[in-house]
Image (tube, one colour):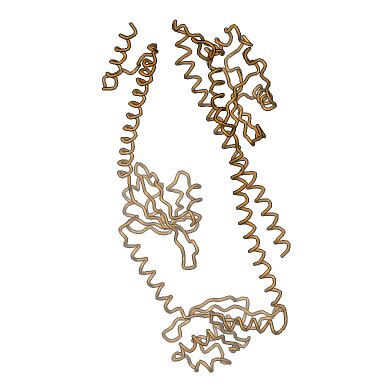
Length: 538
């Protein structure tokens, strides 16, 4: 008993440690994925800024200067890297508990040459020197908070970037090449709240687990005490007899000579109900041979005389009633056979019920819906006539003929049978609906669990139908909806584009052009506004 408790305790400790570690790993991984996503967004924004602003400024005589010191200049706009720095500062002003963005390099511009990198920054640069394609991640304390720091190498992926950095007068390095690591983009994500939530969840798991442990320990102790008590005095034996007396299972014990030596109260009740069909009165059954219940007593004697034949079950007829018997061997502590113990019950109604189930089976057989069933090994055991008739229509697409399907594995209908087996092997996954392709046809499956009266799973029952046209119609409707959504999205983008130019014009900036054109209403409106702005520029 103590070894069981010890194993259980060790298992619980392991489970708690495991849950704690997995929770932390999941938190770090989620923070990493979020950080990488944020960095990708900033890279996209920077790329858009270079393409849509810097390139136009350089290619046209705008009078604007591109500088890291743009804030002190009336005609200055930020460098792409300065844009990231500025946005990082804006993000930091939202509070210490928000995500922070940092950009730094081993070769900073003159205005940032005095910047000191911390240990994480130095290690990130060192890591990217060997592997610039893998994010550098670490959990640590930062600013008094638990955070996850994620660094991604900022590579020079465009030749225009290389040329710009090599040609600037204030560049710290003028021999950059394509795909060189120019710097590091780092996101710092606070995880104190997530860790607190993880801790709260773990505490609840511990509480529930400890409660379960207490229950299991109490159960084990109870069983141990009960088994120990079975070895005690005659008084304890009397308790066992009392249990037999009060059980709801009808029980009869006979000795090796097949004379009835014990009848419990439940058996007496049944015998009283059968009194009109017994050769002796119920009160006289004690001491009689069990032969009185059998038409062929010699066969029964031969069977019950050898304990190796037991347990044995049979159904006998007593008048108009049917009785189910289960005979088991009673063995003493020295291994000697004392005689058969017979548990029995009247099953007349059960047999009628089984016949009714058989009748219901006929209803399934004649059901106009397609139905098939498989056993627990997922071997097809039954197809109703409706299934056979429907399968005949698509037989050319099946791996076997319809007449050969019974006895085949359900794997013949699936490209990924392992996935289907995982679902169908456990009744807790059912009911389950799925669509499968058979040639050009689409079948809709509705799968339920077949359970016996004792709650044992003995395989899936599948109702199915051909839904090819239904699926096609649903798909067409979905595509039409998606097209409408995309059209609305494009329209919104055009409107937003025009509003951006109009807002700039309202503030005195007439340099932006309206790019929206076309034969539709928005396109003509865009061309009209552009003509209007062109007239204002003259």
